[in-house]
Length: 108
Image (tube, rainbow, N blue to C red):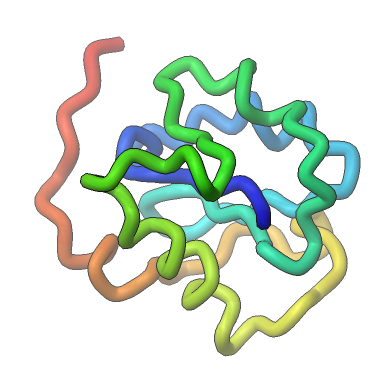
């Protein structure tokens, strides 16, 4: 089990969660952030700081966003486990279905 970032993050990328993550397992893609399922230690620090409530414990992910569980896994297919997002920096890609989403509107 791990935490999952879902659709509210797309095109928002607030990054408050990155500041809170003690193991640096939240990576920045082109349009959203992704939690590395093998590097996440399930501490839950990221969840309450997300301003749009985009982070869920895997079992609590709403059904409409279940695809994001796989997106958070697929994003790391080519990347493997770098052992920390800071050293990798922004990654210029997204999970396929995320890349295909229309631009998301956010109330700022």
